[in-house]
Length: 212
Image (cartoon, rainbow, N blue to C red; front, top):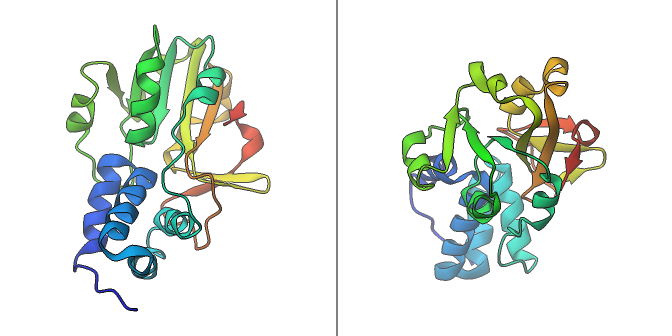
């Protein structure tokens, strides 16, 4: 059964990915389409947008395989952040941050102002009631220190590698590794990607202090 999807869906998804993160936007779209058009709608969504948005493609596959919610439990991430007093997050996945941030007692927290999508950063910050700061790429090293951590979101583990936002490559040179206590990745996708990983770059998983 074919399902007709609205026009302009790709542009709308880009906006959602900028405000929510690619994984969170993907789950939102997949669940909404499934509510109105079932698995056939999810398959149609995947066919229409999957090649342009590989994270959406992977989330649609997870849905069709029976998954119904993202795994947002921050427990293992909290373990990886033990001893951290300053945390810079590279990338944006709002549902995962919403689960993590309330548990980060005594930790100063910043989001790196960098995204391949258009982001209203002030609106993003307003959701955290002053709990989160913004830091520019040129100034993120001012957050370095023996109890400072860089955290990014990863999108599936593939053998020895994983995929992350391109900004991660700009903040993790050899000089940075000696300035931050640890470099942590949180795999929010927990599934392989089946199409070319547009918007992302592949890195060696071994370069992280811990990949959760």
